[in-house]
Image (cartoon, rainbow, N blue to C red; front, side, top):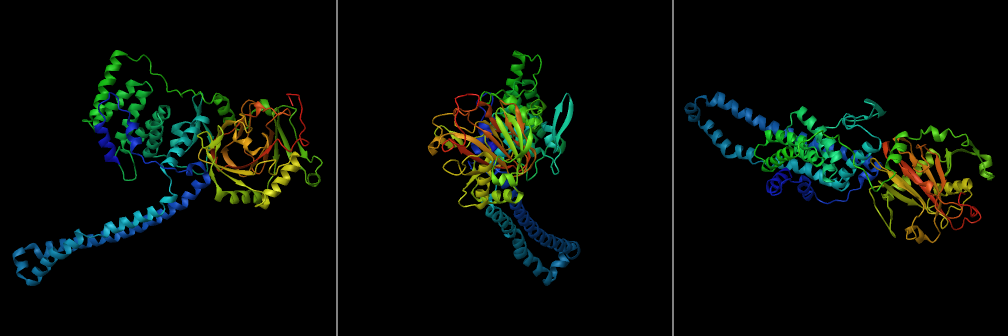
Length: 551
């Protein structure tokens, strides 16, 4: 691969500035990995690597035996040359000595030199790797994991240098502040940083590529810049990507400086020499006044980005919202016989939109049963796309659907939801229970649960729109993962075994715009939720209509 990239570089010298990403992406095989979309899948990769580690240990042991045998042969022959052959004339006069010399050169040396043992050992290791290949991460997984980290970096305003050192930190008023201290973490190597930067580079996201490649170059310089077997890159590679990234962000001076540093290692690189010449001409024709600080690009597709990210960062600690005296907690029974015997702890977290958190809605055993039952059927989560459904970057998770007819715990939950809400929650009046597991930096950007278009695939069910959402938290998370209501300006942190309920539609059947909400990226942890979406039809007497648009 490295030779192929080098060859491609040498051929790509016709244009003034050669975008390296065009060369690299053409050499990367297409794949369809989805491990990054589910943290549970990533956890299973640990056992896969354990198998590979065992195979590598076997290879090392076999190679150690082989090399020890070669060393023994070397020691034997060296000893003969020091002792027996110190006087070749005398030594070879002895027919025994002469025979062993001839035999060694004709038989033993070829056996050593042409032995297949090394190939057999490495082939055994390759076979062990290929046996696991079906469950190994694909390039899409590496790219998805890198995007997930960059998403966390942006949403939680994390400092790249802190991430490289295994910390989740941000800078506030010039001071470094810990956002979360994980129980277990790792330091990134220069090559780890390089791969992060390369993914951003290939996406033409130079805001991120500059930051990660700067760290890669810094670490490669500290390590001496040399190549080691498990690495993809060297200091030269990092400088090459970084120089062009700086050029793309408008920092020609830094691009020139890095290109000149690269020429110290590869002085005859025609492409880099061309770029240096062009950078120098640009600086003469348009001298820089002040180097602009690196700025995150604005976005057009997510107009609520600033509010969304602030709500995610505060993780349910918005005092202006939660200090409202109209909000309250109580033990809720609503006249249901089951609830009268065992009321549910209710926390009203918002009145507009009406959002309620039911604490201890599900038991640990029930949550585990739901997760275990869903796991075999988990697939990449879909979103509405016109009249159809498709995967999307703005929703990173896997999901499965559980029927109440095939799972007794789902029947229990349906009964409980119906008792709390007074709604009919079994099909066709509601959808089956959707179980979701979020991926690396897993999130679901601001969206409505109800259909906002007449062509929505929701209407194929012929039961009207989604009138209400009942979302159950099936696991705790260590940090992140809050549910943020964008226009209502508050977020609810993940509360293990609790359930969040809200009305999606006004009583006149129109969508409630204040229910625009998002699943914030999971910073640390494994987030599982279950969604029950209740539809309009069949609820006419459970939730009566009203012409008042405020209801």
